[in-house]
Image (cartoon, rainbow over all chains, first blue to last red; front, top):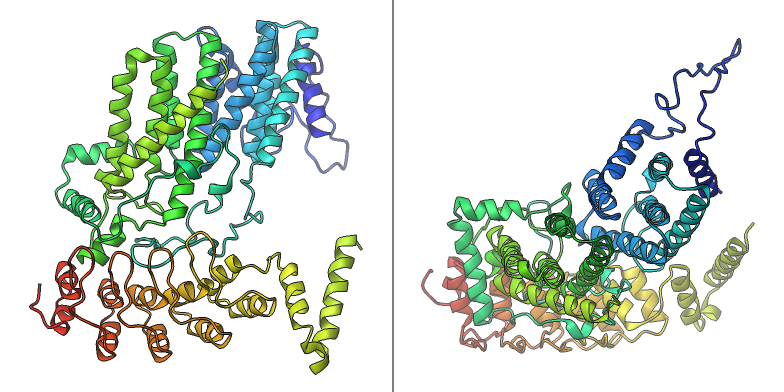
Length: 425
Length: 202
């Protein structure tokens, strides 16, 4: 019902009705104070501290301005990145949400007949997914849409068509999100995970200093629904055996790196850290994609397709990585340095609270560089260099072994290859 | 009252009646246990037994055993037995319950780990004592050749190392990389362990 209400409101805004100043209602003895000011000065409906009406109007203006020289989906990607930062979204959830958003926008774009309908449908679908993802801000996204519609210059028929189309596709994306398994284990307050599938024994993961956070992140993610890879199990790489020559060599390398870290290595570790409160690794690669789209002035259709492919590949890569992590349960370097070498190592960046092998950063970067390189072949070498630096940054940070990175990069590239081969133009 | 609540209340009432009874109900232990597990949303399977043995949750472990899950079963992916997970976490009460239900003391998982190796790696001295007392092979080793003695060196638990040595663990047995327990202790900078193993401090 609420959604229908807001869709009506959007339509009313688009047609320029229903926004006349309302008279003050404070009768003698009334408790609520009288309202004053124009609708732009006060909220149409301002129920939360998040995203006031004024902010929504500004956001809508930013989106409309962006459309003068950027593809339709681009400002929504930017808004998503802002939300990821604001709400401190974890990389895992970021990859999932980003795929839902960009697939919804992709499908809305494809289904729309003309430019005005397309802008409305893409925006409506985006608002539906963002409202699902950032539930506390649901009304804020509706307000952005309401403020955006009059700036599109569409006819009432186009507004109706675009809203209906975007709403339908947005709800399809939300339904997909509801059924992808990401809610498993959450009781609304905390994760209920009681050691399902945890492995013990020589070389196995244990909580890491300094916080010894437990349970590990997203232990049910290996079972989340993938987009284009059928099953992550056949893609799963195998780490060197605990205590083997390769294992010891790579462990010693990290210990030595941490002892002798150069300022440049530390800078690289921090540049790619993408920790809590950042755009996260998937967001980082969306930003790189945005820069390339701007640089090469990619047309609307190609940009929409690119972001859908990129984010599907990132989401599937993430599931494949987590499947690998929670299959092998490889201990982090900080743990192994103490157990195997008797070294109290302090990593340059915080060790994330989940198993080591393979590196998610490396895998995300390998996948993204491959997807972007397909669209921008002239940038492939630079993209591969960035991916390798992103992977290396985790070694400089002291949180991954070289074998984590090499196999992670390869896993990401393999997933990207599958997505590219299956993605319909 | 919703149908779901009626269902739960009926189940709890049935459970209460059964639990209030005495010997007549013993034959129904399995069914009662399965009902209680169902109320917790748990399937009576070996994966759950392996999981809750590692959690040290004797209540659920007992229910699973009563519900028909074999104490000596293995989960299908890594061939891990509940003894492995309980030993790794040092849950002696769970190990005791499993052994009382006929679990083998030395099951070997796909990586070659035995419960004793797991207990030694995680420095669980009380679990080591129990397993050795029940006849665990102190010289069993993983596929990589790491014995319980090497695992104890990794744990840094000197008491575990002493106990294993006192109970016949072979200090000369090397792993596949050719490292003896002493070599591992020296690599890890554990001087007192190296001394116990008869070698020089690292």
